[in-house]
Length: 394
Ligand code: HEM
Image (cartoon, rainbow, N blue to C red; front, side, top):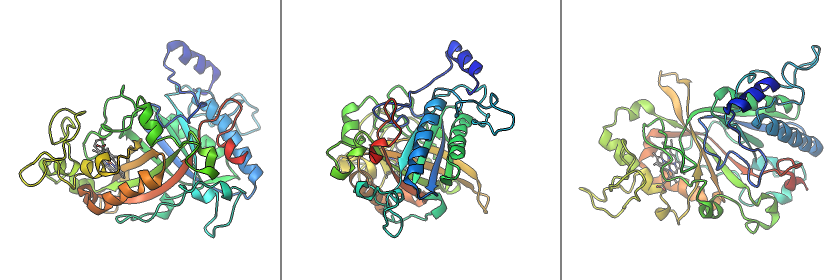
């Protein structure tokens, strides 16, 4: 990507997978989940509303360019004056756009500070659904891996393209925002389209089987997209969604010592095909009433039973998480897990009760530690000539 020559070369060879940045909804939600992630949460360091708006305008332009496979700035990494820093950092020269999507969100603290004070004249437009998530049993949160005023999710099939996007947005934001935390992810743990095969998470199980898919437009309208009637003071969120980000460490070494049969009971699906323990194939509906030796064949405390819509007032969520390995811990164990990302219509109905249920009774919990957590309001997509989140400031 980046240089004009490489751009036309890729277009000619047909390698350049691109997703439009502008549209009704932001890209990076129902877009087929790419293989790599760089996610960053930012704190806004300015008090000026005008500077915040200027940043969102600049980010929109840069994201629009980068997702087309162009440099972050108008000039380019090597085309500018020798006595000025380039307006693109250059590590994506020669790389294809790799299906890059860039998705922006607003955290609760953008609206009000810890003391409840209105920061940018936006407090009366804060959605009722956008309150910091409660503390859940089993949360062992690192504050510096949690929260944030703004978030940017960059997904691509090439890790360097995703990192390039976050790096350049951070560079553009210098003086207005500071990176609070960021997370790299490899290996998607979801499918968001029926055209995709189901990948595996670090427990070795297929993940994403029963996810809401792009093709299920009625389900998306019911469970993922915010409707204009949802919140009178947050009409600007219509067509947007809420993003829950949870960094979940998995005790890989302990898990690896569990017998296969136990692992399958904890999940409620077979490790091989991903079929529910009640039988059939991967896409068969689980039968929670089918008897086993000792209670139902799909145990009541299995993950699938705990989080299934039948036991959660019918709610579904769109999961879009990634595996992560951040080196090893002091004991030599992998510092690894699943960076859980989910898009949903309202965290109060579609996430908090499900996470509480999980914390209370999910057999997987013994192998999980929640080390980071954040909630963001993801505004609808920007139309031509608009900047992302424009309706919030209108
Ligand atoms: C490290 C943490 C987690 C792991 C390893 C994990 C693993 C899995 C696996 C293997 C499945 C079955 C395949 C599928 O349908 O995708 C699944 C399904 C699901 N998970 Fe998780 N999960 C984790 C965290 C969570 C969290 C935090 C939530 C929400 C609170 C959640 C909600 C769901 C839902 C809603 C389903 C689909 C259930 C269905 O409709 O059958 N998961 N997960």
